[in-house]
Image (cartoon, rainbow, N blue to C red; front, side):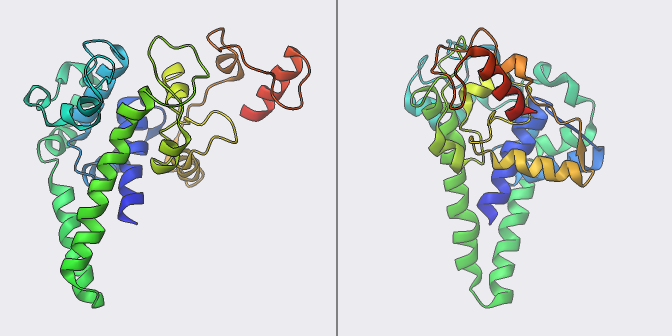
Length: 263
């Protein structure tokens, strides 16, 4: 459960909200999302959003913070986040978020929500009789390590292995396994084609649990203005030549199917 909740903190909060502003929310819920992301122990929301924006700006070039093509698989997977060169938050990249003092504070104390969660796991184990150390190890330590590698796989595996629907200027790829492990982040080629969408699974068969949660939050009034790609985006000339989808015998019929699937 702690893996699932914190994965949403990275995918739904850090990535789709702070890095790409793919939906809107209130200031209190914004802070709650930031705390949830921090509990994954992948540094602060401003740090994360800034480096991710740099990744999109310079994707798969020498200035990309974590490209497996510009450096190596190991660097893109975990080496870059441990490097001293990436310790600081590039504040000029996230000027839109720097005006919130609570986010600047949380970015400095990004380890605090994770420490609190670790303590809660220990206390839960003591309270239920399951064992404090057992719950701490399995509920926090092991889930944190698994969380690291699943999220980092988007940077490494999704630029090396998978399919390419869109002819983007980088080597981003769609990877079903990574999508399942990360609640939908594995549809990486889709995301690089249209970065501001709240959904990365563009079609109904592309599982995107993070987006389903955001839709639920939308129904509850917690978030709004959830952005999605329109049919024109999906039919963009960057679309690589593929067989027509099932049920379509002409391009016009394919367009109608796309309209119905994203409508």
